[in-house]
Image 1 (cartoon, rainbow over the protein chains, first blue to last red):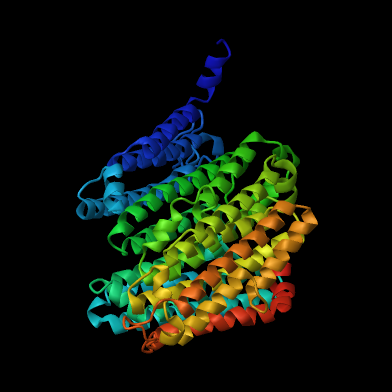
Image 2 (image 1 turned 60 degrees about the vertical axis):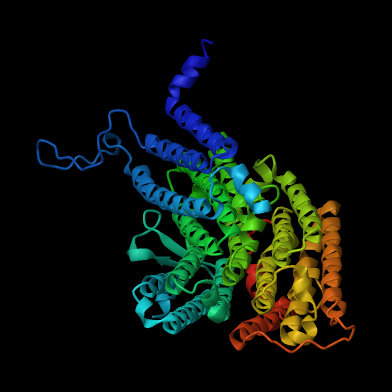
Amino acid sequence: MDELFPFIIAKYNYWASLILLFIGLYGMIAKNNLMKKIIGMVIFQTAILLFYVSIGVKRGGTIPILEFGADHQPLLDATAYANPLPHVLMLTAIVVGVGTLGVALTILQKIQRVHGTIEEDEVLEDLRQ
Amino acid sequence: MIEQAPALIVIIPLLAALLLIPATPLGPRFAYGLLVTALAATLAAALATLNLVMVANEAVHYRMGDWLPPHGIELVIDHLSGVVLVLVSGCALLTAIYSRQSAEQDNPDRLNQYYALFALLVTGLLGMTATGDVFNLYVLLEISALSSYGLLARGRGPAYYATFKYLVVGTIGACFYLLGVGYIYIMTGSLNMADLAEILSRPELQESMSVKIGFTLIIIGVWIKMALFPLHAWMPNAYSKAGTTTACLVAPLMTKVSIYIMIRLMFSVFSVDYVFGVIPWHHLVSWLAVAAIVVGSLTALAQQDLRKMLAYIIVAEVGYMVGGAWLANEAGLTGAIYHILSDALMTLCLFMAVGAIIYRTGKSSAAAMEGLFAKMPITAAVFVLGWFSIIGIPPTCGFFSKWYLISGGIEAGHWAYVAALLFSSLINAVIFFRLIEIAYFGNFATHDGHHAAPARNEAPFTMLLPMVVTAALLIMVGLYTSEIITALVGKAIPPGL
């Protein structure tokens, strides 16, 4: 146990996104309600967003906007700023996630209209007939 | 102008998609004309680019906005991606010509929106093929996936649930890919493929656990997207419930582009030595391929619905190509790359023929084949040629790709893979003769016992033309196999294999 806690604490951001990842995967696989499947999917995507955002952090690093020192010279020290690239990538991934969610909800609405339900077993029952 | 061709490949279909929505008041004829013109221009740009690559005999790099890599995003077109670009834009053009009647029938109210999604899907597929940046690849993967969800859901009724399943599984696949890219990014700090290849070849990263996990996640993500057994469950329903045109566009191209991406990532980002030397599970993949071939073929045999049958045959074909790529020898990879070409053409050919049969008979079960040779002789001929290629009868290209795959299997000493390929050919032949029996001798006798020859009811010209062109291409590609292999496919084989 003495080694386990430091092991978890040292990389707690990875553990957090890993737990979220599995919660999302569980929701997508185990839940019968299609809406809950979508919620699981969104949790799954969000876990990856958090994973990426957390890897851009640097100890003591500030927001990546160029700062000027007392002599009005720009501070060109890369270690002073958080890495902006993962954040920018995740802006794109958020847009993709919103798009996927929109399409998923639209299709879910159509399923509800055609089959009269969003419970997976009832939809399958309806399809069999 | 000609040096801008690589960018035009992606930009033309994107602009067409944007133009199609405001062009709605101009009517369906204009939308059809715009789509076909745009895709013809895309094909011309793809051919020009392939020509550039062949003349220079090296990869063409196009820097978007002249930002230098690794910071800017570049398009990289080499012999492999050049061929796939021509293939994708050609198949898309043929499908667009084919869609004249069926797309309007399937989408009487929203034809322009449908065509816009069509063009967006083509944009995504072409972009995935051309890009030289792993994150850009993810975005384009999602563009093509999102537009394919929209297209497949237009099949109505049971298509909604099938598409929903595809959407959930497809998102898992893309997320696995993204997570894998994250692992690689943490270790390398780069996203450009060429830059990644250089950094990943350094000895200190060879044994890194993070890179291995990243590679595994990326490959699993791509496998989900290409419907490799046992990750294929979403695919047959999604493809068989879709509209006619959608099935013709999505079924041949989505899986093939995913296989191209697998090969690209395996050998251009990682390397032959890494995949076959460091990754501990590489020899298991060809067994997965064997399982995919056997299960896909047997399930296809059990199907009554024509398009579902074809979808399961695609599951088996994916096994062919994945197996060939992971055999770790030159013949196997040559076969896999050449099979991308021939399989796209033959599935396109068959889906078009089946689409025409469904269009005329309104049925998609095997019973729709009854009296086909009398009713639709040209469609029947195209159908037979497509099946010849699936079975692997010379001179169709299916024979030559299977030949390379089998010789790759023999060279690697992987007898189970060779046996699975032959077994699959046999099963395909059985299915073929079953269908032909229905087509020739099915009970289309009239009720009073006479054999009344059914009236000739051939598919419309806009359907026949692309079908016949595809069938002719099957033979042409087959006849020019050695030229294609030496001039294009052979140059795409990475050194050291």
